[in-house]
Image (tube, rainbow, N blue to C red; front, side, top):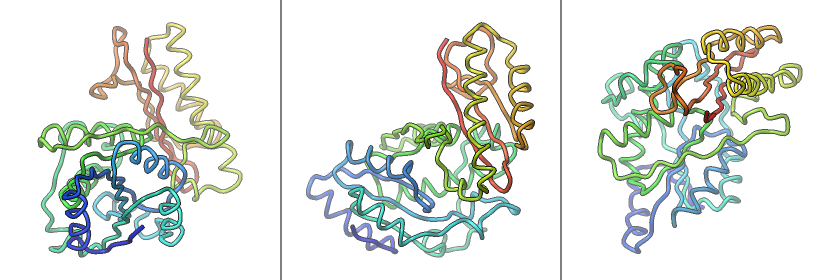
Length: 282
């Protein structure tokens, strides 16, 4: 695996691959990799000849009081994991390489409506930062396909909308959530959890499953179910951000006649903000 830091050097390598008829798969990350990220690489290898992973802690998607400065940077360990997974190129640009005119003077890409709800309402500007950097990475790498985890369900839908709206010739693949033995969704921020908090954290997925079971049993007061779910989380030490039962197609509130749903959740546990979701068909 080659590690490259500059756009021009990466493009030279990828242009040669394209001339050889190779397809390119992209796995964008912020580093501090875990088994969920490696599953993205594994899935990319099934669909593309050349795999490019990126590690860039994107300042545009962090709010003023969030963990940009403290976000874990573990480049050497990440390189080892990616090489073992069969990644071909790792692109690790500096902030100046991605935002040469400065982050405050960068052209912005924003998916309206979808970016303003749920996580977007509690983290203003977050998804604008995500779509801006992802669109830049798409322009730099020009992949045939790109791979994103389903844990951030809203992000995945937003990126799919951006690609469709801007006519980008890229296949977007959602990769299933990877969980630990207690069903906790793997996350780079799980490292913020204390041992006691780590023991409580799987309750988030447990409450999602209990809520889904109630819906499958016939309950249709979705607002009440969401309120009850947040109360269960707060009883064990979470600080609820939101719990929503929505349509999968547009993330709007579900009604009694909708059949393809997703339960979206976000909650704080100690210093960590955890997200999870669960799809269900009625």
